[in-house]
Image 1: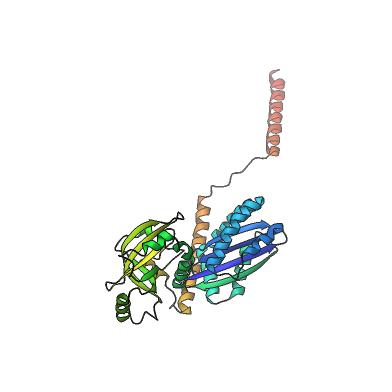
Image 2: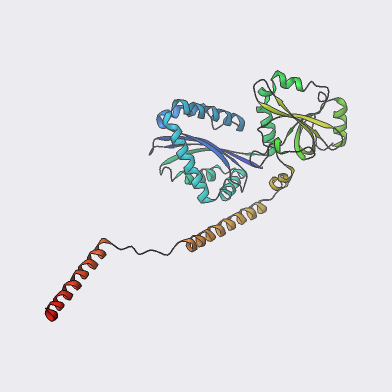
Length: 351
């Protein structure tokens, strides 16, 4: 498991509001998230999104819902902005890394109750009486990549895009799809020819390429596909515009044995870089290693909190003693008394 995906719906009777949203993250890292908040009278609108949906279906439906809410429920827009600001402040107070460690570990262990407790605590400052419904899923980067490819099928049906795959230089090549990293990935704009790139194989292409790949990498394939990521080398990238107005990159990647793979990748997708692979690949780590990592995060968070408190104390100016109105009145009366005494003495001795 490299990613956790949490879907949340909450209801507050105290504020008469409904909240719907999701969080996507890695263990020990600040998660990505998005929410929409509507007054309770618009709660039926949220029913167009189900917490049972998979990642792509949920996110697509959620984006449509949010646009609809902005059009049809005027006050929901300001409510949503206010809630997102609140949620960001809560994450900052708790530490994004610590929150990512808690949520990721709970999802990894399939402990939905713990996930619900963590999120209820985060939302308690928004409303003291809030009911939370949660669904959570663990996702590997390979699974996320295949899912991302499937979500792009409608775009790949575009005539112009299909025509690209008929070009003589790519027609018989195996079809691949890069491993997607939605949190720490980088766009293909940032990749240069010669860079390493991880990918999964969708089909093996021509019989010649199929034979060579199965012979050279027998442990990586079951039939015509493989969910085991290949480390390849980016050979070329070419920007292609579809009739629908979207931009894709046509890339060619060397498997490492002279065989090239082809892929059409939406320009907006974030691709896993080779350096990140070793930092984020965690599937083989033991529970003890995870507990050790979480302990380090907790220790770091505690140190940062102590340092911030010390810095705040040092940076705070010394307290200023403010004079009250009563202080001024007393001073004025004493001054008058002193002047009166002085005038009387002057009159007695010099009058």
